[in-house]
Structure formats: structure tokens, C-alpha cells
Length: 157
Image (tube, rainbow, N blue to C red; front, top):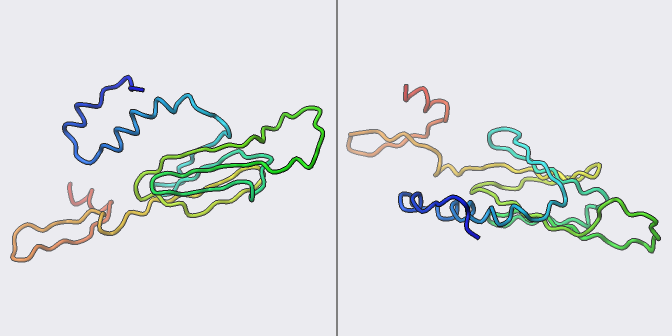
């Protein structure tokens, strides 16, 4: 399915963003998908995030969390009903699979289930080699020093 927006001009003038454009083009196809279980995405700070999923009725051993390279998959498989004869079943306990796309360098640090809410903690860990460096001009040896994000803004002024 094609998106309503044409990314071809951006594809011609950028290098290495193919995966991003594919995600944007394919997001429209997944937009009308499953809405169970409901979830919240929370930005705790600049490099920490949390996903809260409402999984009422599930036990921790009935939920699996799998972190792959750029994807987080949460699945739930409800166990036996112990032969209960329900008159009305209003609590949704059907099996589910929920997928979240993760950006580069996002790592899952922990998961906890409390009061029917599954909380998954994520953190962005950028490797030292990818952090900004100041490159000196001139001289015989190239010298590179690590700079902080706040220091870079004041040095540019």
C-alpha cells in the first residue's frame, strides 16, 4: 500500500535513510490494525522512555517480551480457565501480539508488571564513537576532543 506522501525527492538527496522512509510508507498499512491491548508511550527524559500496556487478567508467566535489533515484540497467551462457567465475560483476556519499532541505540532495560499494567523501561545509549567531537583545524596531527551537548551550543555562539 502506498502512502499519500511521495518520499522520492527525499530518497534522492539523502543517504542511509532508506529504512526510515520504508517505515513511514508502511506505517499507513499498519495504522488500521489491532488496538488490543491499549498502551501508553511515556517520555521520562531525553534518553529514557517507558511503554505501559494494560494487560489486566494476565500473569507475568503468560506474557513474553522479546527485544530484537530494532523491534520490541510483546505477546500474551492466556492460560487455562480452570473450567469456569462464565455467565458474562467482559474482561478481554484474548491472546495478543503488539510490536513496537525501536530507533537505533534504544535498549530495553527492565520490565515490571503491577496492578494489571506491564511497564517496559527503555533507554537510548549512544556509543562514544557516535557522540559529537570537535575537530581542530590546522596543525600537524588531527586532534579530536569529545564535546558535551550543552558545551557545543555555547561554543557555536
